[in-house]
Image 1 (spheres, helix red, strand yellow):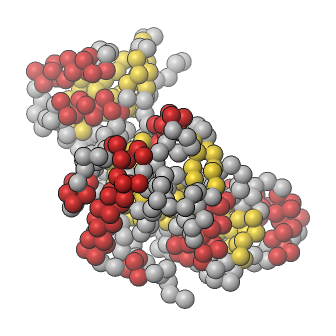
Image 2 (cartoon, helix red, strand yellow):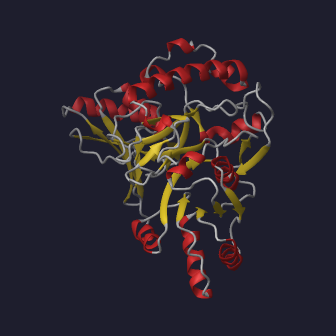
Image 3 (spheres, rainbow, N blue to C red):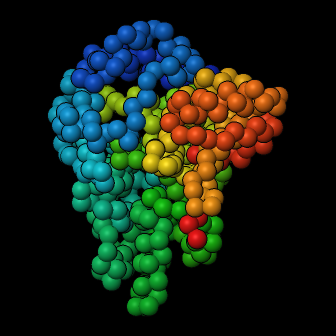
Length: 411
């Protein structure tokens, strides 16, 4: 079988861009006509006007952080599911609580592509150690494996000795689950003297995969790759054998924006991951995940031509409570829009002499006391707290996606 899942993975950048924006225009018309919420929020949008990334970035964000309230107002999914498709087949629950739909659609969450890139092939047996209870993780990998032509052991989590016995008896060749649980199973097999060496590949997600852990798996003859997904969106990005960043899935359109705003940042700059799902059933538009990442330059050495991200780099929700008031990333965005002289900015919140001290560090070309005073006044007006202003040179702030850095220590 080919190294690639399909021809979409190797098409030219121009071909992909043209196809994606045509799909986005179709999707916008679809959601305006067939979802309750987007019929209202996108009512004034002409799909034909969405011709490039700049035009698309003007559409409003759908924030994950707002889903709890939206779903309580309109159960079960906040009015985001399409009404022109068959009814959902499952309802999953994630912490919040946030509810996600599942559909009786082949590879609904699009995991077959990432499994293929990790070396899984038709006819193989996969040991699935993601939970099948409440959260959709087990079903997400299960449906992708079945679509690829693999059989699945729905092992779930826990019961380590039973996991080892099942692998030893049935001899699956692949594992999906968290990397830490794979390590637990391997260690338990060593303890019991069980042979589970048939597992030679794994696709992992849900937690960090530090290099020493990956190296340990490699020494056992297990090829381990990771993917990035959410319960709301399904697969977003995945590793290939090149192990150089995570390649974006072909079924989503991804932007990296400044936290607290919907404004895309330059490639290489850390920001919030915003995803548009091109599927018809649960068509989330500009869904702000709350995760931080950055676009890597160039394309993967493996030959896949889609853009790549660095992986998960932290959380974008950096809200801090300062002297009884919440300071939010959205307020930093308001300050930047009020003062276009500022290229980048971040609040630093510290605890000095038994009191909160908040300082807005601003990258500006010219050091100007009057500008500093104007910014300080804007902080009071927008954030309702007094704050210091520190004007710094362009490029001096860290590229870590933080717009609020809470460094308080209460010693």
